[in-house]
Image 1 (cartoon, helix red, strand yellow):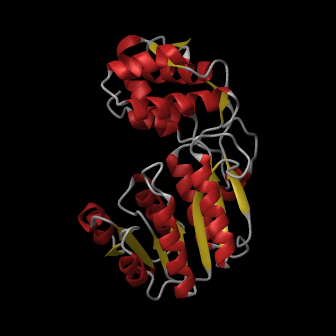
Image 2 (image 1 turned 45 degrees about the vertical axis):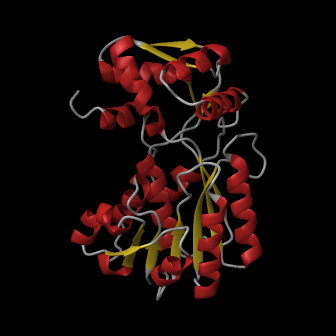
Image 3 (image 1 turned 135 degrees about the horizontal axis):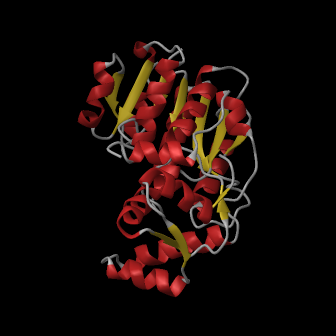
Length: 286
């Protein structure tokens, strides 16, 4: 069986390849697709075949899929511009007759009120319409999304967001990567939709984990959307970016990422990474 991992030069893609190998896949059975091949040179050093793959260049996708049985479509990195590239990959997978297409979606993509969800919902619908045998991996939030907040808290002792007392069910990127490796390597997952999430944590809980890792008190300070907008603008962010971030916090405040499913731990066969473990990995010098 040959497996293609798209966007393999990215952080999640790298980790998926590592997880595939750790779970027994031969490196020469893995194809790593990367828009910039040089960024995946370390994967080539492991014996993985690295090929050019750009979601906006259909012929590169067709070439990457040659001889491939299963493919992981990692969602594009540009919110607002993801769907056309996803459609190109789905169409190429249909042409290639792959036996399994796994897609990294977002938590409860078909029902959640989350600014990121519509593109994922549209992609899921396109996959269903294509007839390609598929698995949906609906990832909750990445703990690594708070790396900047952790760095800021190290300086100020404050972790601030406009989410009120809401919670997220985030997990570490390595956990999501391992789940993807499991469904790619094992039979029995086609047709399934997995809601992948870690344990529920409020922002006060996250601040407590920051405190433990940083060795200093970190206080969660709820902000209003107006305060958040002003702070983001002071960093030099453009109006569209400010609006997007504020919309994310607003959606989180309404419970968009507060879920309780156990699919992730069931798939990977172990507890998910804790906030403390994840933050320690982000501060290796501490």
